[in-house]
Length: 271
Image (cartoon, rainbow, N blue to C red):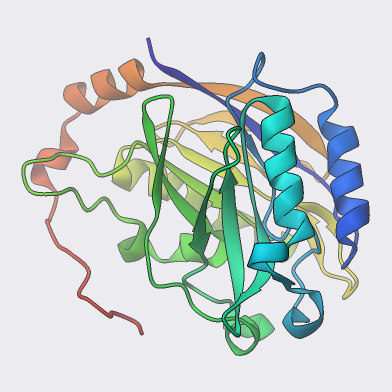
């Protein structure tokens, strides 16, 4: 049976202090590694908090200490580790979700939907590509925070002759406490409509602007039922298991995908 052991890391973040955050996370993770988990998921902008000071805080992708730290952690722990960071590349600034493998290789996804209510669309560039990664037989669609509100972007778009494009959806976030109800509902809704588990990791604490974050990190199965659910505002590290065989059996027993409306995103949509 193919299983994916997934570790959710809900933590408080030090404002605009990458060194302190990386040090805190390393201590929080302790000896956690490949013997216990396949994937460690950190919150959005784990190195800085949700900063709009992109010109001051973004690091060059090719020379980012935060990205190098992810690579080092993946290599030392023998598992994949992922989280988003502020980077600059070719003159553009991105809220970039980085997927770091133990062999040192990287995959990245640039946040598509930028949170205009905080001015993110004025400080960062929009991503244009959906990104699917593979781990332990699972195909995972990557997303960041505000993306969760846009079901068309995240909807299964299987190739001709295929039934599913991906097997799990991953979303990292800095989702504020006043909107915690939509966060919880949307994680479960994306699971139900896409017949796939959802991994959602949010931060806790309060940022430098006084914005509070309630956490509510969840691991949700394909029926929308929580496997890990911590409705509290305290840090935690929890590991859950996803089974590819159980997912296939559920999809066969409840084949709603057979009645799905097939579509494809047009080239350049939203650009």
